[in-house]
Length: 259
Image (cartoon, rainbow, N blue to C red; front, top):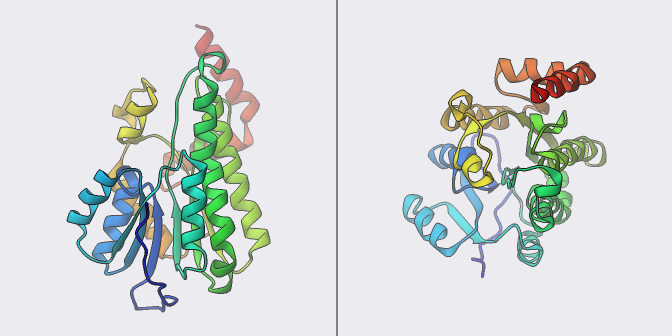
């Protein structure tokens, strides 16, 4: 199912680094892969289907190692984690996300399980295999979370829970593996196919451009930033407000949806 690759030596400053990226077929994950590839780095990435692997292989004919892995399937993820164990990645970006939006009673339980599997459990499985080597090599990890982690909202309860858990995981990793540079990107809406697949119905005209967002995240990753980043000033303000005035934000949401 998966394509094997040779282990790479730890990256050195000024030399090609080895990136591992999930969700590299579209959205900001695709932009991150493009930026890393254009800068001469080696990329290992996950794709969901063999067709996606063929398409990316044509687009990136070298320095790109692709593993077919459906992150909704725990068996696929565990097999990938075993394959990658001991790899000396210099930068790991766990970006893949999945959402199925709707009220709690209307969201099928299988969809809730899928969200937790892709957004949280798959990341845990991969980190369980990668963390010792990452810590030993003082590598970096970026978890792509969401502003949805900061406050409950209408129609995204399960999704928000997975992202809140992911943000918590970032903090826990920073304590348990002090040599790893931990970055957590809590970001807002981006104009990608993600929202159409999730059936969000949001007005995406207000969302950020995926190209610009991906490039900003890439710069934050290679600059070695750690902790929480939001990438844009308005997202920073939104997160600050949600963290410090969550009761007021909840009251505003209730009032808005009641009218």
